[in-house]
Length: 103
Image (tube, rainbow, N blue to C red; front, side, top):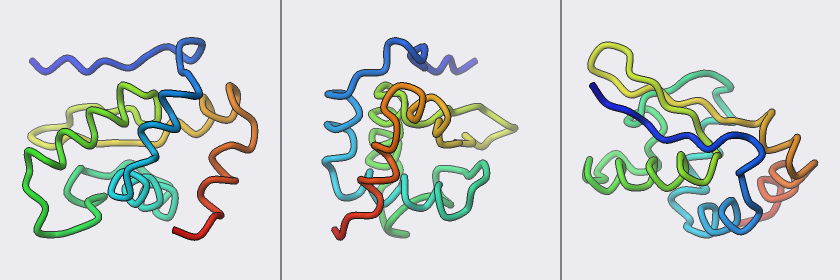
């Protein structure tokens, strides 16, 4: 069974969040999760339909390890949800500010 690593809220770092969001594809994934405001599969949240699954998987791993998303396995899908409450608790208004900036 797949075990996903999710840092506890108090271990989410500003450097980790900013590094994860510095990549334009990962930023677009987060924007997709915010726009839907629900649990999404990796494929649904993918910024490009032609992205290789291994590349997409790596992007989600980085987002997970930074504490930005929580991933669970449901059947054969990996479902992802934004950890907005945790991010806002650690860094108030950071996510809102970053997502409001032009790319």
